[in-house]
Image (cartoon, rainbow, N blue to C red; front, side, top):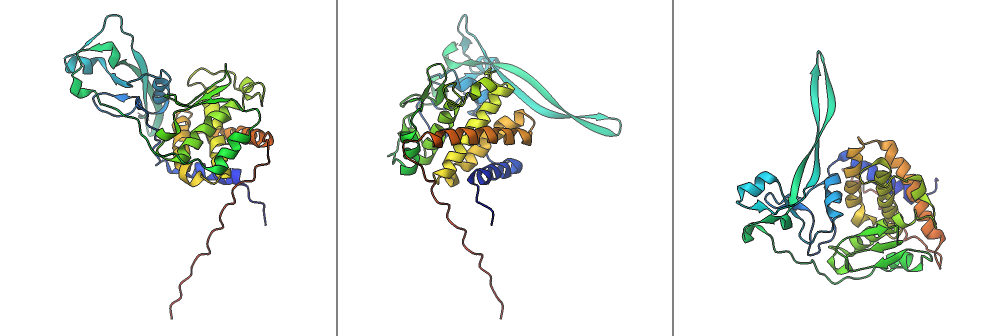
Length: 302
């Protein structure tokens, strides 16, 4: 009997969900600032636009197009700067008897509500933090607590991020996450970024172009999310987090034309990241046992 490989299991789960293409990614915590969205349609920005706008850490992440500003009777403040967001889709072009599919890409400008005067108060949502009693999960805590050379971890921020220049992970308050498991999945994502530091695996030297949206940046994001998925599998919480991970990865793979080789390459680096974390524990970590599948029941007709 072949040896069970939890890395292969998680990778296959992710690929299976990606191929189905039906999992919408959701931000797994809610702080007062919320997530970037259009003020009028209330629709959140997706894919690369979501991460671009989130990176500015704006307190009220609501945006308007210039036409929307005029329509509601508001006006831009003098000297206001816009944000560029990307729109793309696949177009079918007929060429004789064949049809070519080509990507159509364009950008448009949006403005943050702080740059706009005269917005009716009724249009601006009143946000509150999500709050629930957070219950630490012992297996998840063990990996983080016992990692000897882990980055600094700071809570109570408005966003989650790894900052390589200070080798620090910042996270929202654990109480703002919708589920306890989501807190660890996001923390693992940022900690996996930290394994690429020069003092650890040095992966950031391989993926050296950290410009937002480029191939190296996207591969590093895929690596961190798959590493997080692996750690969730090792700690027994992947059944609560795997769909969100798959959908998160899909937002990057669609930009990269769903290159399956790309996810395998990311999985290889992700496993190295997880292996590094496990090899540098103060005490040995023993993965949470995977429950055996119940035998299939067979019914008989008499």
